[in-house]
Length: 312
Image (cartoon, rainbow, N blue to C red; front, side):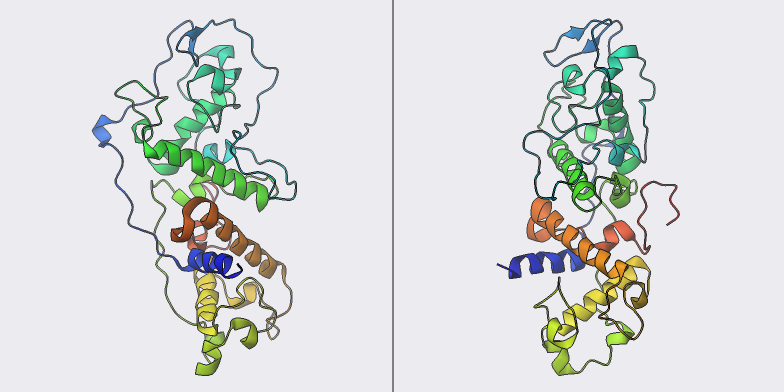
């Protein structure tokens, strides 16, 4: 039914995020990556791989496992999996000297690697080390470090991390044609939970003169060329227009032509694509309680940050 995606789009724009959850373990109990024994690399069956074992000719960007979303993007190039993680961290692992073994696929070096199994070992470890920069967490958040059981799926945070890897891949593939535009940093900014962005119900001044009757009517009967938010009443439509303006730090003319708001504009088209994105993110990864809104990424800037060094 058409009302379901409309509801998801509206919730994605207006939902208030919950308070950040505490870290899974006290900081004093946190630990770094498991040590790799000299002379060999741990492999999936619990043994070790000899230092002179063969390696692939090229490093793979990584692919999703068989359960990944696919076929919903009109054939867009598959997005790289590691770049959204390493953009705010390390492209190569720090403090890990294991030579040519680092070029072997991660799935052959570690147990129970799923979403990132086809990455090289080096790139996989760089991604793992980059989590701290992105989310401000340590290995113990997702892994049973004390028990020396990194392969365990017992922690919900590890399962959620896989879903978030799939989510960034889907966003970059479906909405950005395979380019790694959305990274872990874009939303998290070094925090385990992205910053909450409370929704304020204020009409922009351009819509403040709407009559009470117009505020109750469906938006498409009050305004021209309404597409993604058809069926929403004029008041809530106006609230969302004001929300766009505040969350992106722009004026209405960023997306609309002065004096002709119905005219097509590249930023207006992009805004519709962003609404579609928050809709499929909500439906695929959060249900009706999605914390992802415009401000989750934008935070008052028209261009969201990919890395800590981005000024925009």
